Length: 358
Image (cartoon, rainbow, N blue to C red; front, side):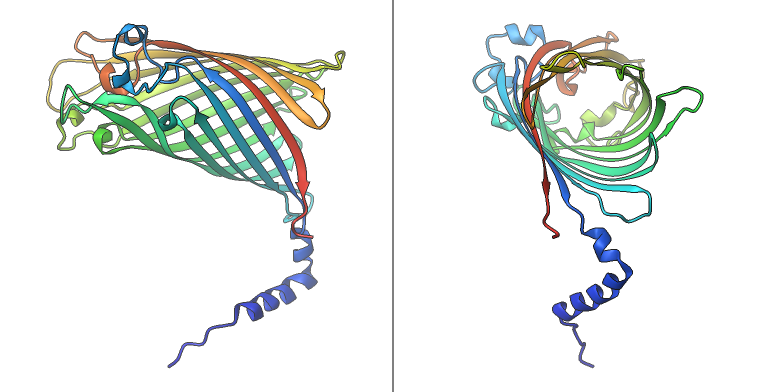
């Protein structure tokens, strides 16, 4: 029997006829809110090299093409669609795409896309789910110990994240709310470094408070684990279990200035993260471990200089301290060496409405 195919135009007319009397089509015909951002930054150590590596004569082996530092251009576009799906509930479908371009090292440039669904249940209460994707992120060049202890190979990985969060007010504390955040991340490395493939689980709790003068205070605590997916495979480099547990602590204070016509906000944040590896081995019987502490301090200012255009400046300092067991010299391939670096950013943003459904 010959299969009949419905004409696409007729199909659309049928759907429109069904939806329009119910008011569904009118509920979907809402403007798109768009936010465009362009960041101009500078990173003085974009490969996160240690002091020892920086002092070496031949740093090109790590992936340095010209200099250790690089300017960065970061455009970002966010699209917010808010259809009236549920009565008295705000629903947002948010998509964003950002690209970080390192002018001194094209291989370091990367793309991030994000899609999320947001539902506002009541004041200070949101339910959000979404996905995030990084197709390729370049770390630096390393030895592939399965092939050679002399030659260096480019180390990259892809990252896909799935997240959900729920926020709600704390009734006993005025202007205070909390958010529970869950995320699962998959990281897959290129063929030279598949022994580092990971699956990460993260549980995070955020506490937010707004003072009477509308200043914001935020405290965030997170705990997570990462499973080394490729541990125990036939590769000699996969004989160590690179699974780990980690904890994060972040604090933030935002001061809203209502007495100055130029400075809108001042902010400061501090992030500390500790990670611990037991480094169990299927081939070796000796005990092993490694531990490091990451830190990030950030200061920013929101300016009110140009009408309808946001202007933000910030400075960021990042560092890492590493300690390891006598036999635990795995720094050559895991990008955990001690380092420090500085970043400076200028960011411009513009919000506008796009009425493409009218």
